Image (cartoon, rainbow over all chains, first blue to last red; front, top):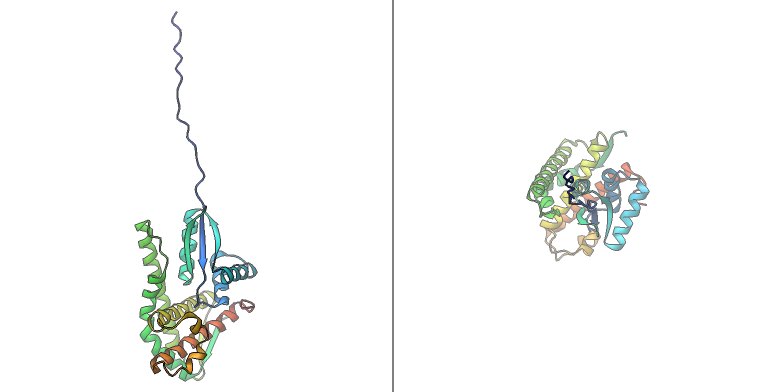
Length: 95
Length: 155
């Protein structure tokens, strides 16, 4: 009786890396008023006015801040909406 | 939210309307030029450029229309809801950026932050001082609207 052939299958292992996160960064600008920036953040980021003020102050002090981090498609949409408000918004891959 | 109102003298309305006729068509182009459009994906870059341009053009049209419609003295602009007020705010911002880039490119940001100082600067040509006064007026209108939308936004 023939031995059943045992064949070891070398299935390639797939390692799924998590998708990289993207940051939406807003830079300070000399034209838009602070109150205007607060209104823009509340409208686009759907955050409260105190949260928006905190972000706006950080930008004013540090010249820039990350206002949102997450998946690329959403980050692109938010950056585009912030640019519709004429804010200096850009996308950066999260380190 | 009830309608929002902006009022100005009839003279201010006339002056600002005249300036808008000149600068509003350029505002959309300036908006797109200033935007940080991702350049690593042609399809996305094309979509962004088209979207920003269409948005800015439509809002410039809204702004020009609102000024033309404002009658009486004081001239009153009525914005029917928050969405329209936000569009108006964005359009004012675009116009200020356009003035900054096209008319005041040689004036530093620090000096522009307090345009009242520049009013007395006789070294500036009259047209530029005139545009500076309008730039300040557009800013005042923005601040008035922001205070109506969120009274604590400037605190």
